[in-house]
Length: 351
Ligand SMILES: *Cc1c(COP(=O)(O)O)cnc(C)c1O
Image (cartoon, rainbow, N blue to C red; front, side, top):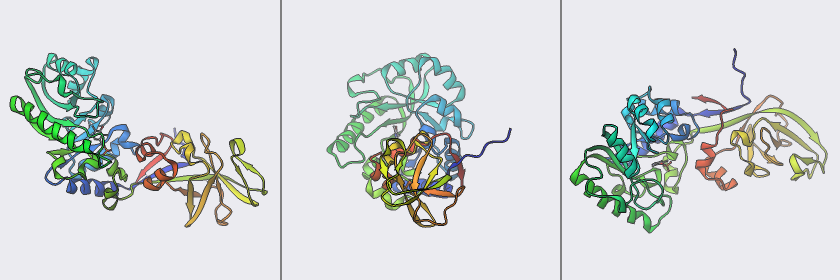
């Protein structure tokens, strides 16, 4: 059956993606830059992201779930894929069959991995985020015996801020990892995500794990100058009507036309990830004319004041303004959520 066309599309810039990865690789100094591609490549499409970054030379990919690893395992040597959330007992056999490498996060996961044959794995140390990982209080002499640790890693809780906890986590990671390396085989160490890379070479170790910066986000202001925009969002105008001054637009009439207005409705809504926070706040652009969002964003629709654009017709495509930094400031929604919330109803086309 023919695919129905979508009235919403993401235009994804493959060159900008690769540019951003190369920039993060350069900023990582002598460390190899990997790529966090969890959550469907932060909403862009994991397979397309992995194919492009692998082509550019990236050799370490980080996903959260085993199912996400399975989704991309035919694109790269599977042992280049690390499963950050670890694995459950029921998935060990499958993980070994696919050949992806789990990140073991707890003594229980380590014991399970050893019981199922041991060998090559990654290990997450918790140096202060207090989320996932082996804590300093959980390490004993025999815990890591017999493991071949590919990447010994930890994760920073405050890398997007200048906070004393960054140096504290770095120091604890140095100490814990030095102790472990003394008794078991550890190939490489890794601490920094995108923002962590900007904290300086002391944070780089052997492998870095940028995510948001690859996709055009800047989790620290210093990243902005290095990063190009990857995602453009477009939506199609379904209907245009004229409304008299005083007309109420959308659910609960949160916008009342101050003048006679030309109002367009497009086919994007919060179910696509275009969040309700853009109600009476977001905007679109057509032929360089800015078209404010008026009224509430609904599930599948949004309304724009298009009085300023006489040329705009039903069926035309407008650019939804979704520049991550500006859109995040405007909506109060973190750049991460703006990307990972992008839904499955978009056509994603790479250019
Ligand atoms: C998501 C994630 C990253 C990437 O972080 P960004 O801030 O997007 O660069 C790196 N490491 C771990 C453990 C993660 O969960």
